Length: 384
Ligand SMILES: *Cc1c(COP(=O)(O)O)cnc(C)c1O
Image 1 (cartoon, rainbow, N blue to C red):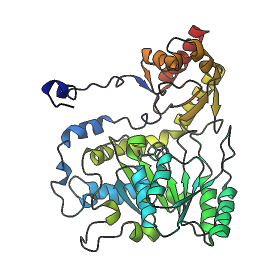
Image 2 (image 1 turned 90 degrees about the vertical axis):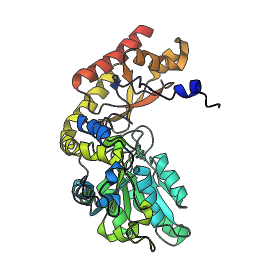
Image 3 (image 1 turned 180 degrees about the vertical axis):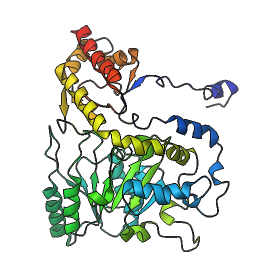
Image 4 (image 1 turned 120 degrees about the vertical axis):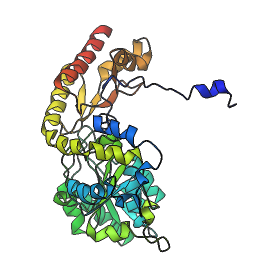
């Protein structure tokens, strides 16, 4: 590419088409910024401006009050002893796994685990074993199957897995498995458990100690109204020296954090949204009611909600044979649904999907949800 003035112009002044749409994109609904976070972006946008008064590492900065946030507020919020901010949930998972890296280490993960769990485990050179789910249509995981899988690993490798992980909830069906019982099974075999809470921390109350997990990871841009990429890594005291081990040469820098992690608007938006996030998790009951109500509305017009049903989370997965049939004849083919929704200022169903897709009801009131449900109805009626 020749870097002429003309070709460079297109990188400037880029507008976002969907910023005033009704948003049902599961990736985005709980990552929408609070007004305070938007203000923080302007205030702290200059590179390294959070580091004005840094004396060692970013998590220990007192002004702005990152130290209190990371070392006091976040451990209390997550119900865990030690927390660090990371670049995302995946980096948190990788940091934990990498800290336990050994020859022939195995990690036991749920079948519904996110791809980022898999690539993190591959990067840390783990063998991956999956705990099966009940499959279509419920995708439930029986805690007993964690015990069975651990037994199988012991008989195959002569030792239990190095780590176990549960996705809570998974990113496809929004299923909240019985984390407490799974944690108990892992404890029986002394296998440390990572809870992947990318889709829960910041939306609903989650407490690692109450569940019995050794580690918890979260995603700021997905569920904590933060401008990412940013995530959280929480660990119990038992493992904090391993995960947060210091460099032998650079004595105050933690190796797994590469010294310092989120050092800009990412942490400042997470902090600015935090008071709202602490409050909003208390509205979780209402969010679940809204999701169930919306699910019934779509089932009334011929869609089928897969996964836990009635559902316990705002992330909903639908099968829509009726929309698929329409796409076979409609103008625009399989893109017809995306286009119809877009023309109604609704963003969030992936372009090209009709047969099945996921969406999220998080943060939308009944009026907006009615609008979305009515739009689906109208689209179906228009084409049949
Ligand atoms: C979105 C998601 C992630 C990735 O989160 P990042 O913070 O972007 O790394 C991990 N796990 C699940 C289940 C997710 O849905």
